[in-house]
Length: 200
Image (tube, rainbow, N blue to C red):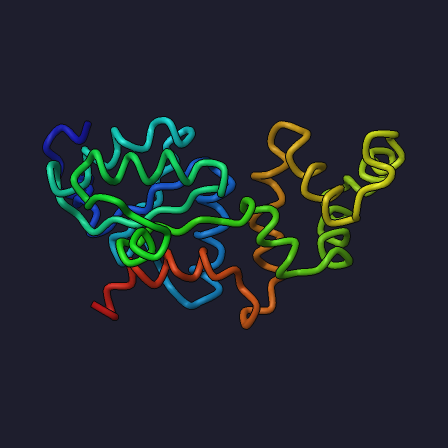
């Protein structure tokens, strides 16, 4: 509520990026800054939708049947079906495959954001980030658990990052900060490129 004060009026976004959770938003915002972009100045809003089951509501709100702004999105591989159905039901096309969704600006992480970042960074760098968060001790304890003792370090890291509330959100910006930008995950760069007004 602005009470009519023009100094407090917020213009509608030029583009909206739909993501599942806060960690996705923080990762994209951090990568945008590293790419020299100011998403707020560009009129780009990154909006966590609280899980893939909610995606259709936001596609209807911002898509061709709603405010019709430029849209993009990011989801995990396990939620690809929800995203595809949401796009089709919201009028973005039919029989969409992954390539068609990417042309629309919607990209799928394989398997999820953490997996993309771990593969881009390598286990040693991710462990350094975990250490900077003060979580290396708990991670070593986690690695010794019988269920995880025989897994690869990459599998252990991915699971560990998701085992504690808030750890994904705390680690996402630091992991992106540690990236060699020539090895940034393609789904993240794809989303940001789709809402880059300078390329329109």
